[in-house]
Length: 391
Ligand code: PLP
Image (cartoon, rainbow, N blue to C red; front, side, top):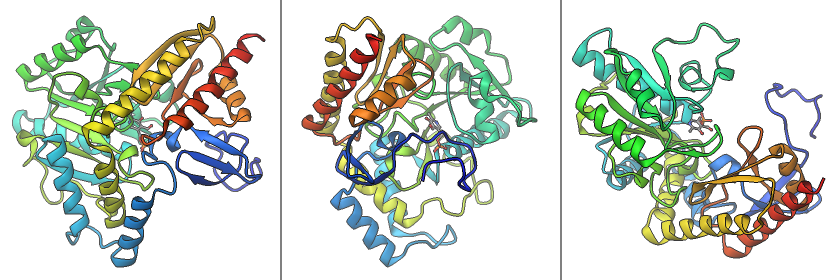
């Protein structure tokens, strides 16, 4: 199955394993070999695999009314909107299908707010260096990494990049045409770098004074992943716009953006839309995820499990581990080794992990992982690092 002679576009380097089924936090290959999953399908499967309530909700919704488009309002979409706005204390939500599309929508909302109030020229969005915001043309340009700004010219204008956690650099970028700043509270793809509390506090204070909108991209670190509803909840601030995707659907494609009251009347019929957004099946799946994950008891467990991973890896005292970063079940381990070597070694021993750049192993286990699977996974990862550090 895994070779280059298939008709799929050559955009992915598939890992050498043929996964055929999953249960809870384990996956199985075509030889029935078991793997502990520390990837969640890149931060998506918050409830793991074969989750009874999630499957039931999807089945019921698929067999009742699976899609009607946004020509009509349906109950599941409305229920999810109510639940999300009440959990986040935001005013309105727009549903999309992916993280990139969520960020595109947020960029449009910010620019329209600024256009309505200040006219044509105030449209620049600041983002952070080392960020990742998606693969559409605008979100590639929003992504603060040069390697994503090749080949596909011309990219949309109106973005500039700030060094994360450098307040002077942020201030130096505050020209009169800035309308918003977009940032991840923990940069995921860029290497699992959490933002500093002081930096975020100062940025938000300055932005609030200047009516510059604060947008948090919570696509990877939101919906319980870091042990709070959103990653920015680790700072005592309120953004204007929040984008989300990945973990909220638990495996079905759904994303979107939330906004506060100030922005709630900016977008009107015809300004924005998408055929599948708020699809009843995806919304019913997301409702189960929110009902299961979004409470203080589960958040506490997520934080505890994250601490267990960190402490266990620190206790290795490995000479190749440079730093362990992150919150809750979003953890990056920077080593002196190539991350793909560790990933492949762990894979061969029955653990699935992610990388985030050349030297960072990224862990995003399902949020409902139990201590037995967690400990097994930690043991395999520790053995893999120890083995490779002796080479
Ligand atoms: N924003 C962040 C922070 C992400 O991590 C990602 C994907 O990894 C995206 C946006 C893009 O999401 P999607 O792949 O669903 O378009």
